[in-house]
Length: 426
Image 1: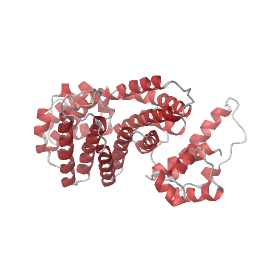
Image 2 (image 1 turned 90 degrees about the vertical axis):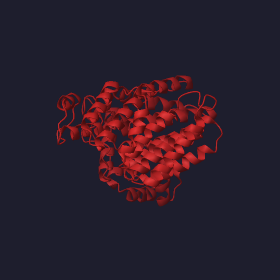
Image 3 (image 1 turned 60 degrees about the vertical axis):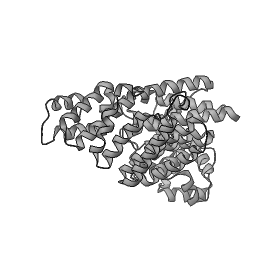
Image 4 (image 1 turned 180 degrees about the vertical axis):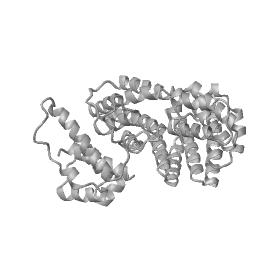
């Protein structure tokens, strides 16, 4: 099997085991950069090292040593057969580690969902031509606009092409231009992670891993902070909130040492995410301390002389964003009554993007649901539907609608809402 196929299987298994490249390297006697080259297909392992790595990751040796089929179907080209073989090997390797990233029908759907698109970008990247950095930045800006506009289906369809082009552009460059292209690659993977997180898909972990590796290669601390944020969210979703908080706290502290306002603003957003992550882990004291620190950092940034000139790639470091995170923190801590004043002072129309306005509706729906106010829960869900219909397809929102549908007290209009938004029956 060629090194690229082996590398793809190793990366898939490592991510399924929730291991970093550094952790895998320590168990096998390699550096993190060497593991990166193995996974990229540019470093060939010795037979002994390959066996050690497969044992560490729980990959069956047969998945690595599988041979080419002797014959092809009459209408199948070599390229098609190679693609099919890679799919089968990846599925076999990931199934052996207990991963759930690729559903059994992932490659059979006539119109694949976004998670399947990300899987294809991860393990079967499109062959793309390089473009200029200016064109790449424009391409990325368009994809980012799709995310902030909550156009998730369109973004999912654009991601494989964006990622393939970004990586081809990076590979064609050297020096400072290559580092800048690495930053664009990282941000493309950040978008892929954000999209996977919206769908509660396990593919978020390998996407976040790619984002952080590219961000570190770019040498840009701001982009590294952005990548750390989405990786920490995947840690929280994987049941490791403490590790996510530690990563965010360290990265925010590093960014705070920089004097530029963009670094400080990104650091403030990391503290917000850390506060919510701590709240989800029921670490009340940490959550409140981190959120207070985030709000203080935002207050220091307020004013035209210190605010970043452009919106951040992640959430913005503003008072409204801090209030939005306060809602989530108090709701996660089981004190939704303390979230109500923060919700009351937010003007949804003044939030900068559709995605953020939808987040406001979602967080308010959770808050009212925890308070037992079913009527206001439905109102908040309807608001979310109005500003961003695709948000209602998210598993978390569908589950919330189902809970409302089968609540002891029936709210007028909830059944019609559930039917319209496709909430699953319980």
